[in-house]
Image 1 (tube, rainbow, N blue to C red):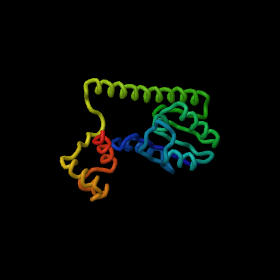
Image 2 (image 1 turned 90 degrees about the vertical axis):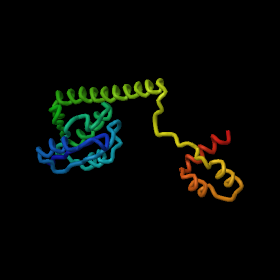
Image 3 (image 1 turned 135 degrees about the vertical axis):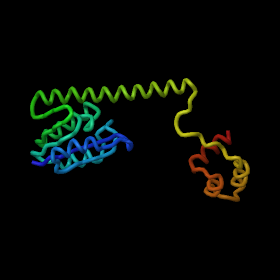
Image 4 (image 1 turned 90 degrees about the horizontal axis):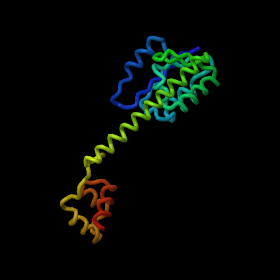
Length: 186
């Protein structure tokens, strides 16, 4: 029986330290860590862990939300673990999936994690809509047409320079060049 740990954070500015300390106290034999959104189960280290884990192992997570953010994904992962005869222990929620009560509790916490994610996304959408109503520009700043655009465009149009040369002179990306070209021709 091996003690397997799984740690996940969503963004680069989040620290794995809290989760790592909690799992280190258990004496984990193999630890899988990743920085990835929990919105779905398509995560590299999660897949590796699910492939690695064997019958009789115990999977430890600091919290159910680190394993999955959707109830559906959580239940699929738990079912996969059960098929492999692997126990799941969540430290924060104190859940043990070997009992019917533990599986029920796990389902409740999974639903709460999904609700939390959906609420966060809804607040984000509302914030974006409110900012747009105030006329705020969202996203990367617009790269304006350079002062020497007309001159470089005319030289390029005559065939005296290539697109690559025009892009280099204008100091812009190929995508931005073609976007500005499209606007210019309108």
